[in-house]
Image (tube, rainbow, N blue to C red):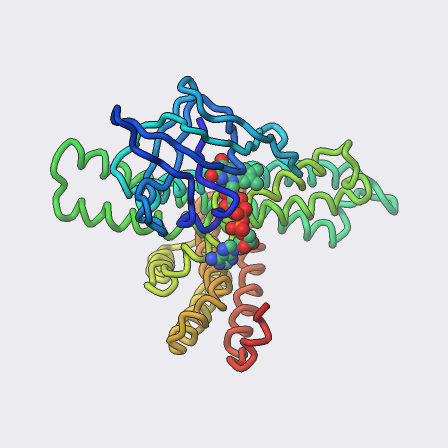
Length: 397
Ligand SMILES: Cc1cc2nc3c(=O)[nH]c(=O)nc-3n(C[C@H](O)[C@H](O)[C@H](O)COP(=O)(O)OP(=O)(O)OC[C@H]3O[C@@H](n4cnc5c(N)ncnc54)[C@H](O)[C@@H]3O)c2cc1C
């Protein structure tokens, strides 16, 4: 199967999709136009986002269609020559009177179905990013233990050891937020399923709503962070390999190229921030952080839990300061910083929780990640607190 959304002039902005869907006499539809960057574009079945409402300009004029390759009408005009993920063909498709069937209700293509499809796909890319991060960590550790310089393994040099500790901490943090997000999705989907079999009670409906909102808030956070970390870890992995890392002989060179797409497809990191920022404004992240703060953690992590509390106070101050300006532009300007602050605190708590339950696996990562996150949160807080709104023009292209 493939998911055909992107067009030459409609990437992040899917409201601009122009591929045209016209109703035919037999109740089916005909599709005409071009789709670009479609993974597995020569597939048997395609889900295609197309403009079904003539004269419409925005997302409300788009519907979802199912195209079956056996009906013909679609040609692969080009297979892209990519930097990485060479095992996956990425295609440009031309639709010429391609017969297709409407999927679901008209005009719900973008506003309902793509949103739901994307949330699932974003969780998939989060898992892909965790997988790549694990591979980068494995490669980096193996090489650092076997390569000797100045008479000892390079893993014994503090500069290399710290890189390895940071890679491992970010890997464990990535996996923790992946599982937490998947848990939220599971809970609300189970209620959805039960709701199809019988009427839910008020409490059950409220729980479903709560977990749906958490899944909505955590999915862009998880995708944004883990895909950026996959890149950082692949970069550090090449660095640990030195000159050998630049050679095609080593796996890390491929990981470095493959990682580069993860913070681009299924919505770039900038678009994950666009999705996440409203959960900063509405307090979804803060409420969940406060839930985490109520739990009991290992006494060994007392200092780190205190750091997480201090980070939360800085986050709250920064959010209040940005909200007080009551300017959407100002909020957009600081959005990534605010979303990242929330992410460092959330992943910090998740790791502190993991380490409390299983110290032999997670204690080091919890300490390293909280120390790292503390510095990042302080940096963002200082930028926001010290920012002079008169400087805003200096950031315009
Ligand atoms: C290998 C590969 C496989 C893909 N597979 C599929 C697939 O199977 N199906 C499919 O439909 N698509 C697929 N895509 C397309 C992919 O989802 C898009 O490339 C991606 O969403 C970005 O769109 P774009 O390339 O048009 O970039 P643009 O939207 O032009 O973005 C360019 C830059 O502008 C920034 N930007 C844009 N809008 C905003 C905003 N509002 N705020 C802040 N910054 C912004 C972006 O973050 C980015 O840095 C694939 C792409 C690749 C490379």
